[in-house]
Structure formats: structure tokens, C-alpha cells
Image (cartoon, rainbow, N blue to C red; front, side, top):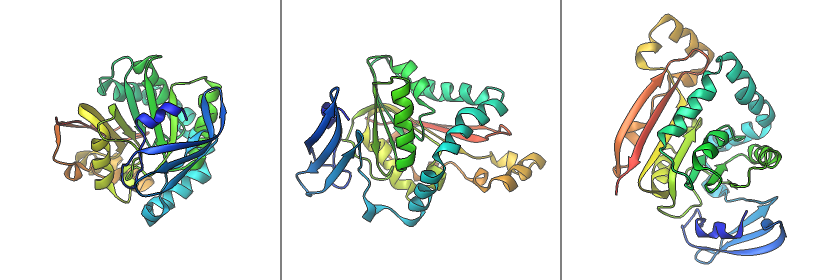
Length: 274
């Protein structure tokens, strides 16, 4: 992590400011050390440049189950998302990611949050929007995912991406921080969906666009022959967009379904009110 990340990081438990205790740095990156909360006295370890904000006492059983699953399958997940799905979707998957990032209406130099970043499938499209002066905070609950993602970022020399390990329902970011917030693939399985959505809105600046994408078939498609077949292959396709769980301080909610056979999904985007 960079030292100036303290400008937007905070304690995920009480949202208070943090102080940095550095053990080792390399090329202006803090490789190891601790972040300390002056209000609640919690400490968060920095290892291999990634601060760990996971709060075990707030991690429910459902989220822990998926965390362990992703820790186990991060390599196969990366192959699936970066190779298999793009090939079998005949290039539709990358085009969709490009469209999702366009919905964010990002300007050059923007500070963007990628929630549940996985192994970084959204990064090429986000970087293209933010430019070299932009900054991307990318968090995930899975340590395995983040370790693999960091390796990829280093290989591709992506210096404007900073990784944090955290629970999406307890984000380690200050209020009104980001110019855009994105979440792809995860909200369906979250144990605290309402809290996660409220956190997305909390850390966004007023009028910021927030885009949420996950698996799902439209109600009309679910009743079709193909829809019934797809539901048998993946029960998550029956998930509905969590529009009723959104906080009140949002505006301009839009919902769109994409019933592709390879990865049917919904796109939910909205803005934080002033």
C-alpha cells in the first residue's frame, strides 16, 4: 500500500482515522507493517503490501463459507473468468464489462472502488476510463484471490491499483470518498446484502454512479424452456436484484437484464443522492 492511502482508509469497525506503523518499504510501497485505530485500538496487519481489514467477529457463516471456497479455487476461477467465459460467450463477456464501466461515467483521474475484485477482471476497463492519473481501490474477502490479483497487477505493471482485504459489508473507507463504485459477481451470496449496499453508498461521493452486477435470469426468462434448463445448472440464476434493500439516499435507479446462455445477469445502477 502507499502511505497516502491513509487519506481514504479508515477503521471498518468504527470508521475512525488510522495511523501507520511501517516495518518495511520497497519503491515507496509499504510492504509490511500495521494500521492502528486510535478510537477502538484495533490493529490491521499489512502483508505483502495488502492491508488486512477482515474482522472475524463480524464475518457471518455464509460469507466465511464463500471466502474459503474462493481461497481454494482462485486459480481455476481466474481461468474461468479470463479465458473460458470470454471464449464461450464469443467475446460478449469482455464487451459487457466494458459497458458496465461505461455506466459509471468515470472521468480521467477518478478514484474508483472495485468491490469483490476477484482476480481483477474489471481492471483493464477501469484503467482505460480513469487513465494513468486515476486511482483504483480493489478489495476482496478472499486472501487467495488478492494474492493472485497482486501477482497479475505486478506482471502488467499496474501501479495505480491498491488492494485491500475486507468484508464488503464492513468497508475500510471513509465517507464520501469515491468518484465511482462497482461490484460484479457476489451480492447474491452475501450474508448481509442490505448492509453491503448501504456501505457502497456510504463510501461514494454525492451524485456518484454505483453499478452492481450479478447472476440472474429475468422472471420472464425463468419460465421458458431454456430458463428452466439454466436454473438446473445454477440455482443462483433464480436470484433477484436486491432493489428493495437499497438505502433511501439514492436516485435514478435503473435495472437491466441480460439473458445470455453463458452468463445471464442483471445490471443495477443508481446514484447517491446529495
